[in-house]
Length: 220
Length: 99
Image (cartoon, rainbow over all chains, first blue to last red):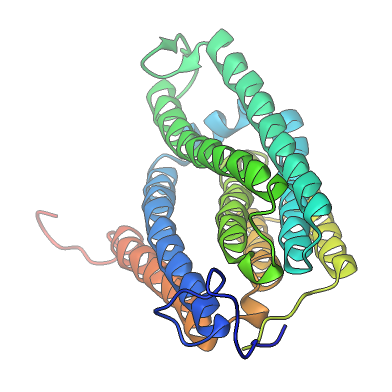
């Protein structure tokens, strides 16, 4: 895509010299925000790692109480949702309004599928009495350390779920905007691309959570 | 710096690679790697994260400034991790009284 000599005024903000500059500015700002998000989740990752080093047996035991049969397909769901999001942005770059709308709907549906499966897993923890503070009946070995593991587990997956919920809400709005042609002409796709960055970031966090929480218990 | 529209097939290929890597990661978790399971699984996850950032998040086509922000996030994260773990992992090294 090349810079138009005289882009329509509603495409180029008056504070920018070119579409390229406008796009780079949005991208830069979004990445700064995502960098702060990395620090937010990074703090939780390191807290988890510290306690895992201090209580290796209890954390391995806790990890074995998670359900990989739900988490594994859920990971695939998120990766495919990232693909549909990337394709939504791509079709918006090309000005294909209908395709963009459908890819966004697919992304949203996959996000909801993830949330439902995650909810099923949470419910299982609830039935097993492994929810600290609400329903905790586990009395096996290292019960206190296992409880600490589940506090970390619910903090991290919970914060991730809140992020995904927000992302689903934003994509929902984007579906309506895309239908109305808000990303036309294609030069106006930047805001959708920024939503895409957020969506991929949420996928990224889960990619780290899978080995950190689920895979670790098999051979600690 | 001008914006490129990547091919749809390219995105599909990246997604397939990510799915295969996730399957590999889960498969390797079932095998005893003699203490290296955590390191290997986190390394695979790290490669996946980089693939997502470079292709899905367009870092490959981004302005240098944007890439710098991504690198800065990694730098600060590594300071956070190194600064915490260098304390925790070395506490037993010296017989300091009263620690």
